[in-house]
View 1 (spheres, rainbow, N blue to C red):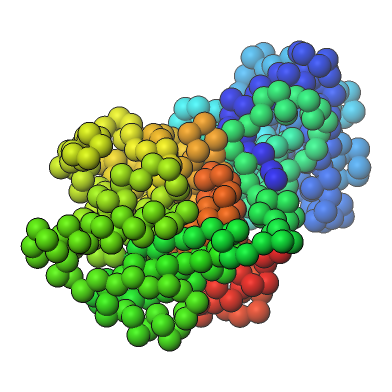
View 2 (view 1 turned 180 degrees about the vertical axis):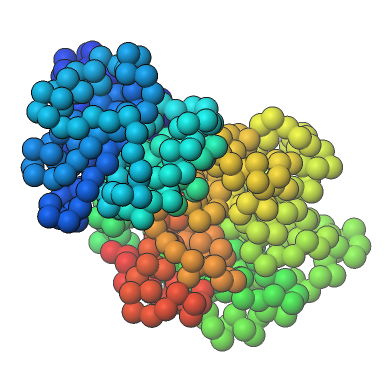
Length: 516
């Protein structure tokens, strides 16, 4: 598991290490600078390359100046370029410049970036919070226009360390050497597109400092699967692994129900039952004979008596389940909305709402729907939108936009902050970098690729998470591990084939090779 810090958390880790534990700031700076120099040494050639280290006047500049001195001592041709007024430099930066000059490392105030083959970006660090303008913006443009390999110190200058937002302009790096823990701005879009190959360097932050701050966001790695995935019991039966109720599919759409149900089974759910339109029976029985079926023909709300009977049927299926997945391919018919209202009353088991279920829920919110049975009122434009804590919502950006009444571009600008617009449930905000929000905790997914951009992919994800919920995995962990596994299937697939050919059925097949 990898911690991912925002700007404030990264500063606190630094502060705890220096002021509470007592590691001198200069020691950490030397180790940071050495890690950047080591990165440069992996590709640079002494007899060929000219290196320009572009430094601001803060401690990020100090890291750069020390890196330049280390590279010069190693035999590289290096110049340290200063941007800003030296008299306003931090004490550490002044000390690093003093050392560099004593070792005859050239310190300059003007240069042509096009004359260098390697540029080290040490202008701004994680503390930047305003747009870059003026001379600094001009220099960033020059760096980006130079035909040089660019190495960023801690974070590319101009990237917001917490959100990944570009603050006016930003350096486009080939490598970023970040210190101690990864940063949200290097993982989230658009920042990750500017970071290049990210190297998380150990510069000596004690484990105690990281644990005291405890960054709220994490990301999983392949070795985490075995420790996180629920263990099977030697003496057990199908009832030991939960009963997943999948309410999915509509009169003209059968695939979504299959994908969600098959994924739940693939994750280890003991029993899966599908509530769907009668039209889907033949396909589902032929392709997923393991699933139980409960079908409707669309006439169930035609009279008070029919409705009463249907309420009883749905209630019985809900009572049977230990986990409910509702929404994939469900449509937005009257009967679909009716079933969601019944499911909304469930408080004692996990309920995952996806796809059309979310679109119907958004209409409930827009209309300020009052649920007579519970007294709950879904108010439009709530801030935040409060929903039951046993829910898991899995919206993509457009579905999220409908739920909270924000434009998708606003949501994309700060994905983590956007998650806070929904209170109560676990939220899986799907994008190229999916974020799982558990209130005060976040999972930022780094697995996957664009092979997942296919119909049915999201239905499989709903089933994956639903299957983990049926195994009694806590909702935040189930959603996080489900998203990670879903992405990992695409990574495994493209090792053997191209990005364009993967189908949702291939996700199901790849899962077999990943699960314990």
